[in-house]
Amino acid sequence: MIIVCQKPLKKLKISGIALFPFIFICKPEDKKNKVLINHEKIHLRQQIEMLIIFFYLFYIIEYYYWVFKLKNPYQAYKRISFEREAYANELNLNYLKKRKFWNFRKYL
Image (cartoon, rainbow, N blue to C red; front, side, top):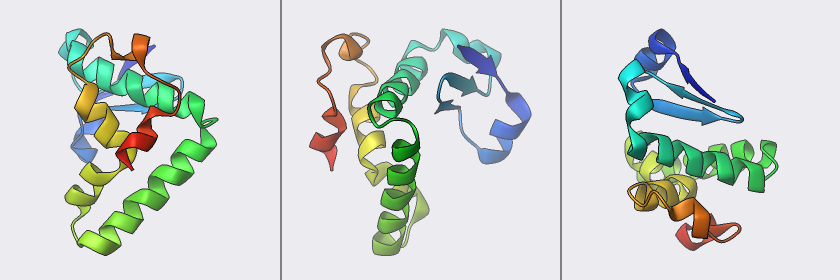
């Protein structure tokens, strides 16, 4: 389910976020943005595979590891394995049909 949630997401300066089982997006017109929705659907699959709570724990741990190492929050975000998989495959709208279980491990 896609939910438009403008004010909180604008403050975070993000276009969308997947919080199982929802995809929250900032702009109503982004409901038609297939690349953004595909990116967030990849995150939903990752969350399911890691039983949701472990996804969030690993995401936070990995983020802070990279912040500590790189001293740059944006670069740390881009180095998270979950984000690397999602960005690398967001243009492939058939990716989830062929994606292997725990495929994010290739991006560690």
